[in-house]
Every structure is written in structure tokens, then in C-alpha cells.
Length: 515
Ligand code: ME8
Image (cartoon, rainbow, N blue to C red; front, side, top):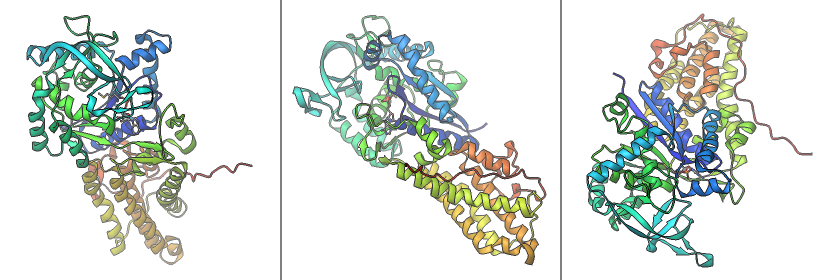
């Protein structure tokens, strides 16, 4: 049986316009999902939308719509984003779906039955923007006497009847769990912020709202709707069949291998979620990775500043695969990063047009011109040939190690080192000069280049599936011969295989000069 791999994105609040931040998280998951599929795993890759809560209720009313009609309309924006970015998600969950109500209410009943939930009254601070409760000690004074959360969100005072989850009793168990599973919170540099929050002592968590209507109804108490984070987190199990824990999907994919999130929502995923699951007697996800935040030319990205970067515009200006590549290559994954047009153009031109594009273009056009448009003949390999080919065949192990810890930039770096070696090899071997003097050697050199390109293109597929698909077409590699088991010399290109006419894959980006 194939090994399984389950990866999730956060489910996005539907009221927002999808921007580079959302595209980034899902892109990271898409690269992981595609990588694992090519590496022989049965993959489940989930994304979707978070559609309940006070924030959405307010946004719907501001738009003059009932929440259901509003969310039906705007959740489409996130499906469109997934299509536009060529994400390979296997499912798209909406928390307003029937299957999700069933799952969320089941989890509630489980918690209630285990006496993990009790009815009381909440009196405290709430930030609608974050849909989060904050303790007085966490807040600072803002202008107009407002209280401000560490995230910068404004808080309001809330007093309402509310159900509480006994979070306070799970602190020690959580700390023990982090200790026993040192790779649960990734990158490791983020562990401290979670453990110190838990060590300060956890308060019981309000898990229902009675002042708002838009949410999953609390079973047997229609005055209450579930707190949106308890509802939302459950999506990860809904999509694999919960509450049917005997279903094939659940047995195969739960617990999830990786919840990918932005650093802003680590607390919910690394504290609340495992506590809910422990309390319900369910298995905990294996890893939560919290990545950094993008700024725009040095500024925080926000609707109110009007500097939101729309992925659609990036694709229009620079190309789809160029955008996908840039997102995961520019910034070490886990760190914050700044978007700038200059960086986008520099990356596109140097790594794609120059390095990879040139290697492919030079090799394939020489083959088309000088080798009768077939995979060249392959003579005896010399030392230089062996060195390059062994590096290409050796890449998978290295890239896999980096991907397994979500070091996307390092995985790409490793591949680009071999691309750089390939370009140096062309210069040193100078196949154009061998044409007359030693045509057999010229064919061997071009063969080595084509074979190197095959390995590179197969490995880069998770990041740039369309472009690498084209490159593999140009090398006449059939669709069924593009997974990682084919990355060996036993599966090398066969001399004499007819090749289609090559064409450039990565054009140089030329800035329009304004008159
Ligand atoms: O928090 N840079 O949804 P959300 C990088 N519904 N990533 C960014 C970003 C930026 N500038 N802006 C947003 C929610 N993100 C909840 C999640 S999960 C059960 C519920 C990404 O729409 C990043 O992944 O506010 C962040 O965690 C997520 O969008 C927040 O999305």
C-alpha cells in the first residue's frame, strides 16, 4: 500500500480579497503535495474557506446581504485563486457545508459528554478582526481609549452567556506533548513563544457565542453558536470523513501530517487544536509549520493601506510559474519577506531566463540543429560527464531532505547549483566547437545535457508544473515517466528518440520604458 500524506492550508476568511499572503501559504502546500505525489505518496491536500463568526456576519451586513448569500458569493474568490495559481488541492472545504456542521457538532457532543465543556458567563475582551479572546494583561492602550491586541486588532468588551472549554487543565499535557514531539512546532525557532504562553497558565476558553447568530448551532442549545475557531479547526477532520472514524479516508489520512499556517495563527493550531483533540480522545496532527509574513516594498500589507498585492496582477505581469517560483525561492521559508518589483524581476531574469532557460534553450536548439532532432547518440562518458550526471542523479536525496523540513529555498538552491554546473559544462565542453572536429563527442556532450535537463525538469515540477511539463515534452519524456522513481540512469533518455521543435520557456522580463 502507498504511504499517505495529508497536508492542509488554513481556511481563509471569505470576506478578504485573496492576496499574496493567501497565495503564499497555499503555494507552499501545493509544492509539498505535488512533491509527495511524485515521490510515491497517496496525498490529500486540503484548502478552503472559513465562513462563520462575527467578522463575516458584520461584513455580510455591510454588503447588504444575509451571511449565507454573502459567503456563497465571496467564497468563490478563493476557489478562483486556487485555479488561477494552478493548485492541486484534492478538496475545497467550506465551513457552511452540511458535512462540516455534522463534524463540528459531533466534536462538540464528544467534548460535552467528557465534561470538557461547561456553561458559564464570559466577561472580557474580544477582537473581532482576529476572532480571538485576549486577557487584559495582553492588551495595550490605543487611541480613543481603545484596547489593542498584540496583533494590532482593536478589542471590544464582551459580556455574554457562554460555554467554556476546560483549557486550563490541559497545560501540563500540552507541555509534555511538545517535549515528546520536538518537531510538532516548526520551525523550531517558534516553539518558545508557544511553550512560554502555555507555561504562563492557560485560562478556560469561551467556545460559544450567544450575542451573534452566524455560526454552527450548539447542539441542544439554539441560543448559542459555536466559537468560530472551534468550528474552523474541525474542518481538517471533516474533510477526511469525521465523525466517521472508520471511514477509509479518516483511517488513511488522520492524523494530518502537516498543518501549514502563518505565524499569526500559530496559537490556535499549536495550543487550542491539540487540546481539543486530546480532550476528545482523538489523534493529534504530526506537525504545524508557521511561516513568516510578507510585506510590500517594506510596508505591512493591508486593505486600509491600499497596498494589497493581487496574485492575478503578478501572474499577468510576470507569468504564473515565475510567480510560483518567486514566492518559494525569494525568502527562506519561515522568515518574513518583503515583496518588491525589483526582486521579482531580478529572480525571473537571473534564475529562470538566464540559468534554467538558457541551459535548456542552448542544449535543445543545438540538438535540433545538429543531431537530426532526436535524442543524441551517447558515446563513452568522460570524467566531466560522469560528474555532472552523478550530481543530477544525486539531487533527489538532497532535495527530499530539504522538502521534508519545508526548506523550499534550500531545495531550489540545490537544484540550481546543478543548473549552474550544467551551464559551466556547456562552456567548458563547447559542443559548437566539436561539430567539425569531433561530432561523436559533440553528440555525447549534448546527450549529457539533455539527460541533466530531464532530471532537473522532473524535480522542479512541484514548483513550476506547466513550464516543466513543457520542458519534458520537449525532451519527449512521456507523461507516465515523470515521477521520482525515474530519476536514475536506468531510465535515462534513449538515443534516437524523436524530439519536437524546441521553443523558449522562460522569456526575459523587459521593463517597459515609460516615455
Ligand atoms: O486566520 N503574509 O484566516 P485568514 C503571509 N480563518 N501570509 C499571510 C499574509 C501575509 N501578509 N496575510 C495572510 C484565518 N496570510 C482563519 C484560519 S484555520 C482553521 C482558520 C496567510 O483569512 C497566512 O497563512 O485571516 C495566515 O495564517 C492566513 O493567511 C490567515 O488567513
